[in-house]
Length: 233
Image 1 (cartoon, rainbow, N blue to C red):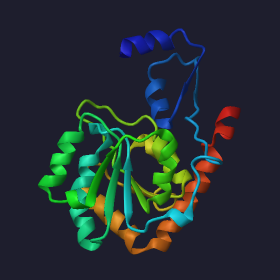
Image 2: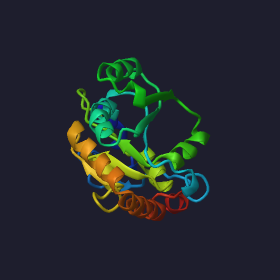
Image 3: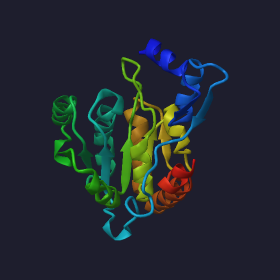
Image 4: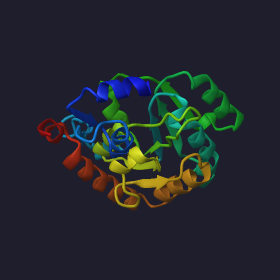
């Protein structure tokens, strides 16, 4: 794949990538004269992924994404016993499907959190905003997997922030374009269930702080990732 990329890049006058992290990686593989620019994917943040405060459920946690290793869902499941000890009425809704689903369902039963976790499966894209609008906190515990695969850009993070969700995410390079710790969301080390639980509990303990983070996050993505902005670029 690297050889194929070099072949294509070597015959390109310009290349666009979706994050600064990808820009750093690609810059090592292209000729210095090739124009390289970051233009992320856009989201409809004015009509589709928008807030709906009346729908918000104060103890609803949400994960949305394909159930594969790089999404890091197992670390969120491992964090749930700590979260539910502090907030017994907190529940986790998991939106998405994939090859890791059966293993993750078994893990949830083994650590005895299955009563507070629901695997909803894949849902149509048109229905996603309603799930974000209901969630108090959305959690993206992404990791670099054993094959080195990782997120190129956190599109679902932009969607969630667009709906004014408070967000807790892993500290991965692609996510730094979207979330600044303590300003537009909470950032934790990857593969660390204890740190993940601590930040989620902190936001559940202080809903007003979570609300301020969520509003700041929406404003940040609205100015940078709405399709009107991206189309002009």
